[in-house]
Image 1: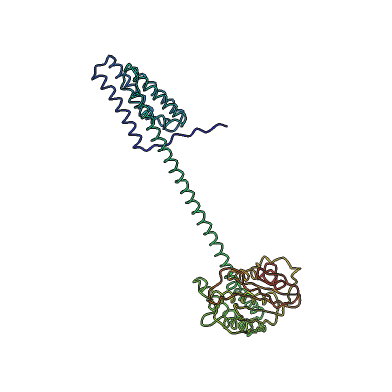
Image 2: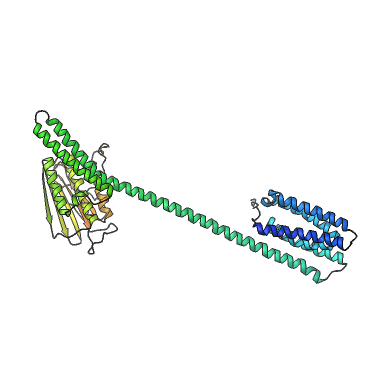
Length: 440
């Protein structure tokens, strides 16, 4: 397997210019000393210095040398060859070995750079010894020490650069992860808000508009034979429109339902039964059991919405003539029972959901109660009506529970029963998604 050749480690502009100026200064020093000392090959030294400067400048200006290991190796080979000629003519060429160390370590791969530095050091020591006509340890200390310093500096810089790059990539990953998390949280919030809006619209505006439609149809059928009955239906439709307009305004403002204005949950449920009985012509009774205690606003809103949705299901689908609603206050919780004498249904034999009516009713009730740690129970049988029980836990300190897991509940049972969710006793309820009365 071929190992990819990585480009040279980028260097800062300050370090690059320091190496350039050092190399240029040493070239000028070698040429100046050769001319000043009147050496035999002074002219050749100046010429080689000029060639070396030109070769070095050409490589510094070519962008490929800074990005390609291969191009850098060829350029360094040319610079090294000219430097060897200069070293052969002047002992001052030995000083150019120091900037060459940095160039070789920076532009070449690590192993190749080490070999090049070692060869350059040996050439520098040998060339200087030839010019001096002798060799001693002092001649080797300077080039060897310079090579060691260059190795330490360049490798240290590369290590710091790699660590900096790792931190930069880590920061980028953390930033991207935080952005993804924020996007996921936003999407979850949007989904939860859509679900909340769907429940609110179904339990308020959709039910009210359906009632208005039924009343107007009844008024239409009453004309022209019974104008008094038609007027009565129109008046009821207008009152329902007024109530729904108030619901819509409170819904937009995210306030409590207008049915709870100036009263508690029991009063709102009693008014719901009275208005349904007057509008639909059925018997709707309300009863409170147990010692009435204050409930959190969220609990009152949830139970009121459940009652409104259940009552709408009863009117639209069950064909009931009698509805009984009981609000029970118990130790550690509250329960709402709604029973009717409608047509009922067979839990094991259910028709397909009607696409025109949706099927969000009981599912919406169940979601509301689960959000507060409650449960929904459904019991029904063909010809024996339907019973709905909504149960919510109420902590002693009045705080709203954060998770499901409240006291098990069961609806008054008749006929076949299936579990409606966690926390419900076996045989107490039918799944909201499969109840034909949930299609409202």
